Image 1 (cartoon, each protein chain N blue to C red):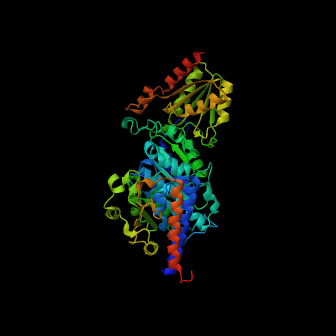
Image 2: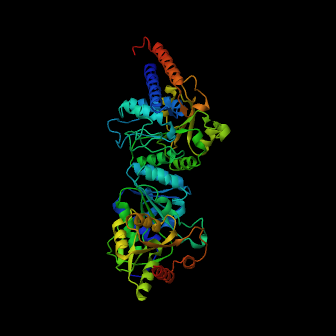
Image 3: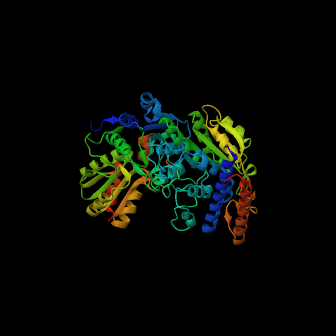
Length: 313
Length: 287
């Protein structure tokens, strides 16, 4: 049901369990992290396909690579910075460079580990993993697309990084929404500006778009759930047809979705852009919604930023 | 093992050393010290122990060889060419643009290469994953790993060592090529790993220390693996860095060799001398 709040980790775990029921090759690797990743039921249902490693994320990524060489599809989920920044070289060499069919999932990603502070925030994961050739990066923005993303990720052959948050998040899509890796979703059409959201703050972009419409601004709203490979055609047509792009992400402005879109548009069809995200500093700690507010990621703030951007001819 | 078989393997080891020299001649430089110290280990693997098929390099039941110390790639290229995985003329492309044999191995460029290694401390965990996957499939295949002793300072190895014993990966056999030298000097002075056997044992591994240039001993010990029931095995192989080159043996400066013409000539003479000695041993054996 639209706007119903659901637990992203629970949805993720259920989807892995569904996929594992029909695909014997799926194995789950845990760095003392399965229960917190919604995979507790996987351990109960498939104990022979669940491997515990304790807190050794570098080792787990290597083991996942080796398992994939034997035809297994390893799924490794843990707190986002510990599966990206910490084992980055293993991700790059053992998964990317070796092109292994491993699914890495960073949970409690972005700022969702709110009061735990910068060691546990993951607002650089897209930036660093995006530099690894051949890795698909998926950042679904609601429970419906998280479930679909898991199935799409398992079906896709190749290394993937998916990020999900921690607190319950609103359902934004009907169950029958068409979800394809590498294809963005146009949530609503519009002509004055294109607002592009991703992941945990997609719902904020959706709410901001509604506020903007109420203020008379015609907004084209796009969900880029696959940050790599980017849906070039959809973004370039938005650039051509609306002339302005605003990106919304719970990530550093450096290297994130906005950067990826700027890399594309600046070369193919330059348009004015505004990137809403975290600047060049360590994010603070505190209640999640208040943190988003501190960094301009609440709907009314996004709305004001867009209006100011549109006034600036 | 009968002594004729060993003599034949010694001759193969000599050919592999000649191939390493051929690579250096092509590329003018390379990580020769650790390649030459592990020639006997790699010879024993590719010409006696590994259950592999050069005509079908991706055969799922094959034994795996993971070169964790990827900079020793010259010995791997030399052995794969000798074993018929690819034409030996490829060795002459070492150092050239787009050569299929880079300074660290790339599995996408050549048949027979199992992993992309080079960054140290990766191979053991990848091999552990292979061993776990093979066990899940109830495959009899084994996973062999060659590590350098300097490489052991990387903490990631000890993550993998814990996990391999915790998951009872007794289908893993690891060689540590203990040539005792790394770029900055003697390994135990740079970052000591001693007591190395006790360290591995405390991580739950079966351990033996062997002469890493003794082909018969290498083969016999591998055939006795797992050394301890239900545990992964490690053979700490004592070796001599740059083994076979008179001017380079035991010298840290030949970890990476920028070959001077006169050194290449001396190296040829050194290998000719080994060949002469081998032929004398072979005389009357019918080989």
